[in-house]
Length: 533
Image 1: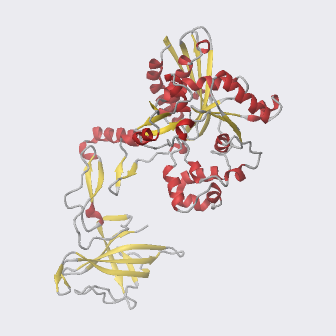
Image 2 (image 1 turned 180 degrees about the horizontal axis):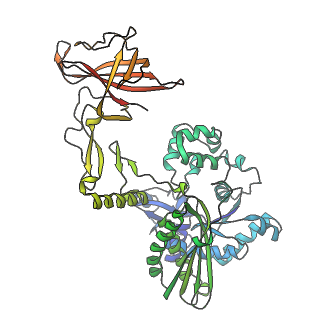
Image 3 (image 1 turned 180 degrees about the vertical axis):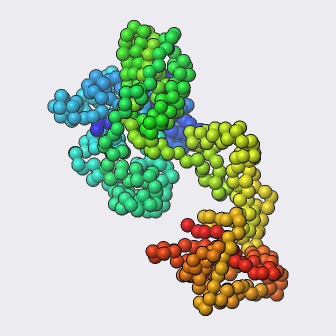
């Protein structure tokens, strides 16, 4: 794979649109932080993620621009067209990066070196921008090679990646910031160190996200090489009357097309990773571009790429390259697909205050879909039919979870952070029973085990059974712990609950940890309160 990279493209595009001279330092900001800056700005000390005030203090002459994906895509169309003059199969990864299969074009120009030289010259002349080119096995490695202007020989990709820093996994739109941070905290500083881990260990600790990153670190492709070719009926064709000749009209249409295109693929258990966008104008011109994506496209991702492509077609700087009439027909073609499980989305997210919270609008597509589904259930069954959990104050696991109707404010009570004497320490049981499950605890001689008023067991637990089931051997136990208020002088108040943690044999050398509760009433009894994973 050959990748052509235009360094600092958002800043370069913004400066070009504003007519700023090439030598003036410039930076693009989002949420008051630098997301891209020119080489001249970096010479003054400006860096990505730097606050605006800090960046301007480093470089008072800094030209400041806002983030604009449409602008970046529109200007990058001239670069893509320049590459297309020399090679077929051009795929836009994102504005600033294009990928090309290297074999055919390299043979035509007498080898990879000849092709690279021609590409750099063509882009410089036709688009007026500087670029770097790299070749390696796979898109990820080729992108890193382009940043270093390196040609990696076939089969040597893993050796090329090994010494590179682990932060290279956190590419734009990859969403691996948390994973990379965790890997660094674990002492993994290079891609080679991460690649040396066993894949089964990576899967057990980091899940599917870790497996994908591990494949990249080892020099493998982002996905297995065999891809399903989608059936023809999955192509989405839309006719326009009147023709579309404005970007705002295209943006309006793109949202609906993205949702429909994604839904059609999902109905077949598929998701798109390479999107072909093809258009026919009123005068019969044929326009086309393929967008490659590292991750399966969401409806918003499809809509964005359609909008960006229309920006490139309708507002390209070279007026002779613009279509002579409006677009009357648009076809979205899933050039490459993966199984739908690649788009498995979570319904719940970790809350900032602990516990679980439902996805919100800030969580993107997953939150939007979850919210719509829950509101629909409320419409069918009533407002008291859907609840979310709030981790509140209390001593028992079941007491600490308070259910709040969907849509109501999820606030903790005033006693949430109180000093709850006797609260069960972390970790809490994975399963908590809402109704008492009778239990029987016996010692080695078959006598019932009880707990005295001084909170001491009458004998070591040896066998435990639940609801009259088969007795199970106790491998180890801990406790007892008082749940409640001391009555004084080391005695527990009558009726106070006392807990015992027990590790039970579960057959085939398996083990199971449970939480037992003993209550001192007229008839003392044991119950099963919860089970640990």
